[in-house]
Length: 227
Image (cartoon, helix red, strand yellow):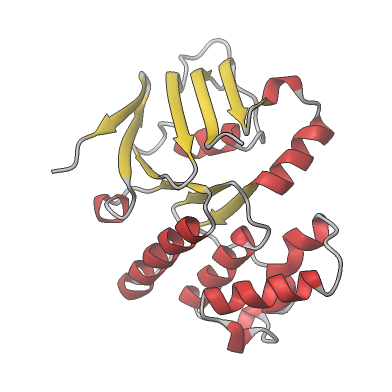
């Protein structure tokens, strides 16, 4: 098994043919155990890049290779199945389901992958314990704080043991203390899961929690040397 999780080759994206590319010439290799922060100005396409990585959108040029599979060779169903198995998302707005309990929210990826009981319950409860919210398992998400909701989102993103975790401004709706806790937890869980992670952020302090930092602009993805 190769430790290369994802490779981007000369990737470009534009919103319409009569407008300049949002970005082009994006190259990236990310391996198991690596945690990358991507920064950039608003509107440069950071969230769009995550969508391309997950196969939610298609590039206008170049290739996305996830776990050795060129996403352009897959139909919609195959792309969905690969994404469901290999990718975990952590969003700024949490995107938890308010009519489900914490445990039910976290178990959703396992339900979609048709993991059988009692394995589904065991893995869900282990994940809740790993992020420190096992006591909240039967609570409904509308009863939780922002920091607790983000822990639910991290647990849900990791419960199916994805090879790639994508976090899009995960601390944007949190206070300073909750944000710091979330960043530390996210890094620790990505490392413990032996996968790779990408953090999208506007914050240099948040980016410093990653192993390396890159900046996205219209000309590509550029590594940043730590000070």
